[in-house]
Length: 478
Image 1 (cartoon, rainbow, N blue to C red):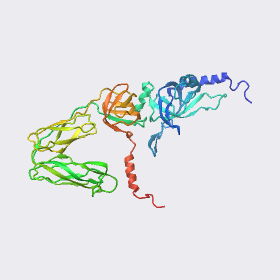
Image 2 (image 1 turned 180 degrees about the horizontal axis):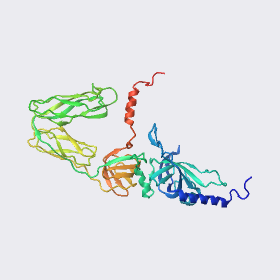
Image 3 (image 1 turned 180 degrees about the vertical axis):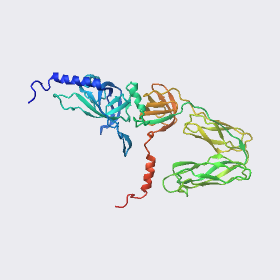
Image 4 (image 1 turned 90 degrees about the horizontal axis):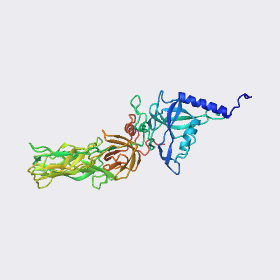
C-alpha cells in the first residue's frame, strides 16, 4: 500500500515539486524566447496555412534536454536535396508558461491555442542565434507525478522560413532572417520562398564615339528567318577587297512564333533569326557582300535562315566604341546620331546584367556622312535614393506587388524580399513604406540562392542521357 505519511497529490506536495523544477530551470537552463504563431490566412478546404506571422517574443527559461543533429551526420541527402536536421529538445515549466505567457496571448488575434505551446510556434535560442520550430509538444512527461504534470517537453528543429512574417521588434531575433554562418562557412539557417531583386542604384548616362568609312555594309536584311535554332547562328560575310575590312555581324533570335516559310519545321512555335545587326560594317566593298548563316549547335539543329546586304557607297559610320557604359539601364536606350547625311545611321544598345551598356550594334550604317556624327545615348532614368529598412513593406509602382525586406546590400544593390504578393516587374520603381527609399528594379530572380550543395542542372542533364524520353516508354516494353 502507499506510504500513509504522503498524501500522493496534495496541493502542497505538487507546489513543492513545481517550485523545485522551476528553481532547477533557473539554475541550469537557458533563457529563450517563445514566439507564438499567428495565423493570418488559411486554405478553407484543407486548412493549409497560407500566411502566418510572428510579432511577439516572450522570454522564458528552458533546459536543454538533448541536441540531436549537432553531433555526427547533421545533414541528410533526400530527393529534395541536402537537408540539415539540427534538432533540439527543450524543457520549460508548465506553471511558468500558464501564469506568465498564457495571460498575455489569450486575447491576441489569430492565436489558436494559448494554454500551452503548440506545434508551429518558434523558439529563439540565443546560443548560436538561431530560430527553432516546435514540431511536437510532449505535455504528459513525466506521467502525472503526484497526479500532476509540471513541464512541457518541446521537440524542435531548425526553422526554415517560407512566407512567414517575423517582426518582433527585437533586433537579435529579427536579424536571424539574414542567415547564420556555421563553423565551416555554410549557412545554417536558410530561408525558402525568398526572392532577390537587383536594383539600379546610382544611374549614369553612357557615351560612345564612331568614325566614318566608305564602301561599308549599310545594313543586313533577313529574307528567311529559318527555324529550330537553339542558339543564334553564326554570320559569315564575304571578304572585302584587298585593302578593305571585312564586315562582322551577329544575330538576334526570337522564340515563340509560328514560322510559315518553306524552310520552317511544321512544329508550332520556333526560335528563328530576327535580325542581323553589324558589329563592324567593314569598308572597301565595291559590291554588296554575300551573307550566309551557319548553325552553332553541335547537333546541327537550326537551318534555313538567309539574308542580303545593302552597300553604302558614300560615307557611313564605322565601329561604334562605347567610351562609358554608364549604369542603371533596365532596357535598351534610344541611340541618336546627329550629323549631316543622306541616310541617318541607327543602332541598338546591348544592356549587361549589371545595367551598363556593354556594346552598340549597328542596324543601319547610314549614307552620305562627311564628318563622323555625334552619338547620344538616352539617359537611364532616375537614380535610387535612400536605404531600405529591415522588414519594411516595399511596393512596386507599376505592378502594385508587395513584399517585406529581408536584407538590403548597398554595395551589390541586391534586395532580398519575402512574403511576396504579386509579381515585381523589371524597370518599375519600388518604394519602401517606412524608409521612403525608392529604386528601379534592374533584374528579378525567383530562383533559390545557391546553397553550395544543389547541382540540379547537372542531375537533369545526366538523367536525360540515361533515359530517352523521346520514346513512348523509356523504361522498356512490359
